[in-house]
Length: 527
Image (tube, rainbow, N blue to C red; front, side, top):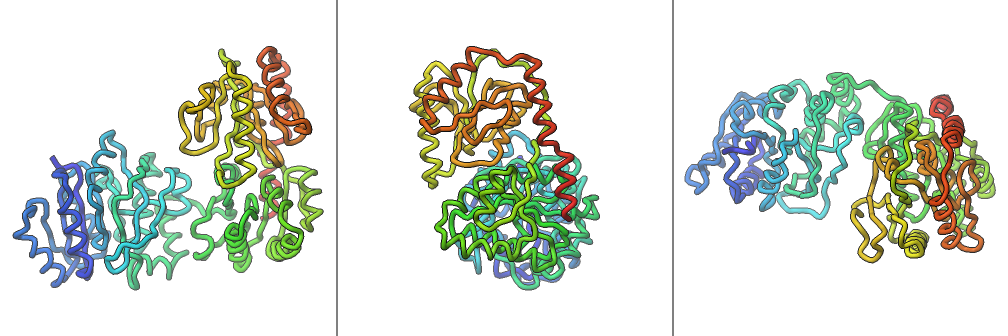
């Protein structure tokens, strides 16, 4: 039974073909086949393929020759002969790592439309340290840039519906995946890194896309009906938040190609300017300089933690950094008057524009069991985060009969080994998360607006924060410590209820204060 058909097009890649085929034939699985497609006259490549006639695993390999038509034509020709349930369009300059095919087959057991991961780089057949990272599957984000290589296995029936476009000169794997995902098919990200790809070479497909970037991007988007968006949203420290704002603004979220590739954006909207270390400052400045050089208007929205980082820096550093930021930023925004005052003291003139709620969530019935949600910081190197995590656990220890759901840290899932009333939930869907929690506790050293607390209030829940006084939220100033006052407030809420009428008043207040339509008008008005 053939699970995966490896279609390997080759055109003048004799330097890489043998390592590629050797790596596939050495796989311990027997549930695959290899179809080499000689794209035009390839005497050296043909000689290499013929040398496998005496190979011990020859039965797994066959080859065909077609008139030269390019990579997409060769892929289609090979897939037309494939017998596997899935097809991998495995480039002839790839090498599969030992056990890679087996891991792919295991990942395909639940029949996803396709799987993908990151991959390693190699150069002249020598493995390098770096690679291309994977991203969590997001069909909207795939419309902005391609994060899935064409070599990953896809259901053969989907290739039949969406064959490779022979008129697409480059970025053809991006178009291949978009045709599927725009029609509702979904990919499954896996963690295993199973192959290495040769670095882009002169006269290759990557070279063509680099030389004709906007033209190739326009072709791909036209084929699948993606319109050009004139605003680019970016963030290095609040990506989840920024992606939600990009959806609300009908904008692109893009931090991948904006520095090296040309763009046509009218407005570059950076959420958060984090200055915690030199590398972060350099990354932010690289983005704003690149966009400014193209005549794009640059807007920075300071969202709380970034303001605190700037405030913590030595005065001499702020004196050097702020003029450099102001030189390349056209408009500064922040979320409230307190942050505007803090920024003004450091030489940044920011207008107040609150960031809206992500979703106008429904008012929900109260959970049957009392549970408390608490944001769990995941930046382990930041001493402020370490101290706050210790505070959260101290609160849980003080209230052993109260169940706590810690959220926000990717990968942290399950009951805590040392605190049995604490359950780690990792990243959460707030619409589902809010159903099982009665109260949210949002504690931090500095912030502008606790948007997660606002989300909870929209669902009829209650909130405790130490940031500042917000209507319909319980405020703990922290002057006498946080642990005891927060514990007392949690127990007060556990033993009392908020009427339905008050829940509705709180909801309406925050829907009006953080209305999406207001925000859209303000930001789009800057373009």
